[in-house]
Amino acid sequence: MTARLISLALLAASAGLHAQMPAPVAMGPAEAYDVSRLPDDPYGRLARYGKALTDRTFAYIGPEVKNEKMRFSGNNLACASCHEASATKKFAIPWVGAHATFPQYRAREDEVSTLQERVNGCMERSMAGKALPLDSREMKAFITYMHFLSRDVPVGSKVDGQGLPPFKAPERRADTVAGSKIYQEKCASCHGAEGAGVRAGAPGSATGYTFPPLWGKDSFNNGAGMSRLLFASSFIKTNMPLGTQHGQPQLSDEQAYDVAAFVLSKPRPVKAHTGRDFPARWNKPVDAPFPPYVDGAPADQHKYGPFGPLQENMKSLKASLTKAPAP
Image (tube, one colour):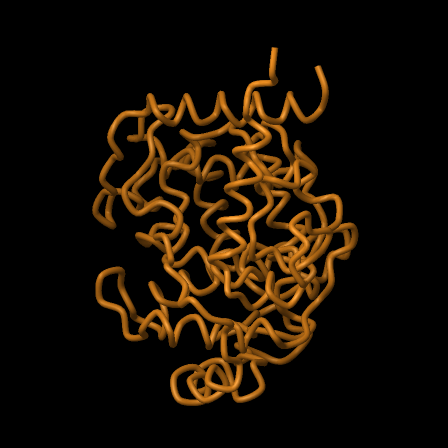
């Protein structure tokens, strides 16, 4: 069987499994995810360490920690910089239920991946660092914390509020000039006029940021999901400015789209070998900001839109690839 047919078979099987999934599970109250209530036993201690790693990644495995062997993260962000409220906030990419949905097919690798591999994907992209050893205490702590957050979610079930809500982009190229104005009005008071964030302590102290940098050398790299405009727009619309909750946005779709484009127009670390991502090119998100592209559209359109024509082209490409061959 060719690699292309294998990829399509995996995708079809994944779609079939999703079609059989039960209704999404509701997220519990905040106290349901309180690790301090766990007993002082090996599981409880590891889950608590996993939460500490989530909230203060920079203090344990960041680039400024004293033990150089523990410098796995390449920046001083925390996992909770994106996975808000210790990865328990609805529609802020929570980890609640994550343990119940892995292993799963991942288009970026075009294969079924484990939860450990997913964690390391974030380590190499959002954290701009390197993979954790699978047998390390830190990897076990992350997985244990995710297991704790998912303990009431049946295997194979999704959770209401998991991931990010769909984002309907305006049918135009994003306007970075308009985005710059929105940034200064809505974002700069926390993240700084130059996007450098606000340090919690002196550089070199492994104390991270009160408000994280949005671009520059201490931010996520161009291989991270947040470097994609549609993904970032959804996150910003649902969670920003600080305090925003799903269903009560402070920004319009247009504002979120333009300010996300402005942020993503700025320099950030570059991940090596992004051309290896999405080897089944028809599964590549249209807003992935790096080549190769298979639709003939310019790179600028894949980064800034308009995305509607790209989505239609990709839909047609997938349809043509999945058609049964003539007898």
